[in-house]
Length: 271
Image 1 (cartoon, helix red, strand yellow):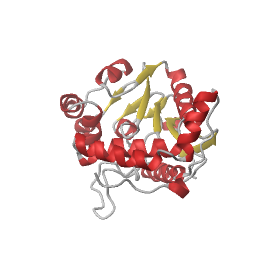
Image 2 (cartoon, rainbow, N blue to C red; image 1 turned 30 degrees about the vertical axis):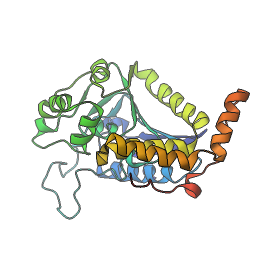
Image 3 (cartoon, rainbow, N blue to C red; image 1 turned 30 degrees about the horizontal axis):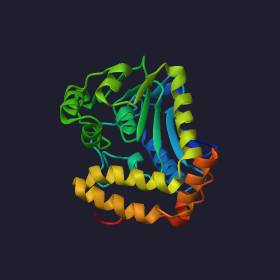
Image 4 (cartoon, rainbow, N blue to C red; image 1 turned 45 degrees about the vertical axis):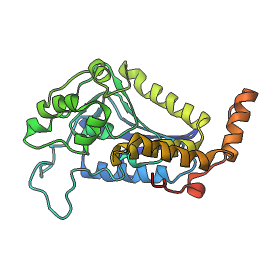
C-alpha cells in the first residue's frame, strides 16, 4: 500500500495510520483511496475483529492538502468528483471502527473521524469542520453524521460557524466519547478494540452495528426496530456463539467464538 496509509494487524485489531506526519497528515486523494481500500480489506478479513484509525505524529489530519499545483477546492472534474471520497464509509463496515484522534483534526480530518463508531480525542488538540471559512461546504456526509451524533442545534453551530473547539468540548457536545492526553489516545483506542476482539462475537457486533446505523439511515420507527431485533435474535439465539458466550461467562474464561463474517454473513431483513 501507499506510504500515505499504513496497516498493522495484531491480536484481532487493525490499526490504520494516516501517514504524512511531515504535512500533519494533510488529506490527499491518494490517502482517501488507500484508506478506502484498507477499510474494505479489513472488513473482509476474518482475522480483523475491530479497526482503529489514527494519525502519525502530532496530528490526526490537519485537513485538505494545499501544497500541490492543483488546489483541493479548484473546479472539480464532474465525472470523478465526490464530496464523500471514503468508500465505504466507516459506518458502512461490519466491524467496529474507533477513531483514535491523537491530535488536530480539521475539516475533512474531523469529518472522516465522524464516520467512525467511537471517537477518542486528544484533550489539548483543535477540532473543527471549517469548510465554510474556506468558501466551500462540509463533506464526508457530515451534515448527516454530526446531526446523528449530536443534534440539529449542535450540528448547525459546528457546520455553519466553522469554529474550532477542544477535546473537552467535543465530549460535552457528544462529538467524542472520551478526551485524554494525546499520548494516551491511541493506547486507549487499541485497548477498547482488543476488548471487542476478545470478548465480542463477530456476528453479534456486525448485526448490532448494522441495525444501529441502518435505523438512523432509514429512519426506522421503534416498532420497526423491534421487528428487526426480533428477527435478528432468531438468527443468533441457539447458535454456536450464543452457547459459547454463556458457557464462557459461567466458566469465567475468554470466549472462543466461531462465527465468520466471510462465511456466515447475510444482510439484514426488512422490518
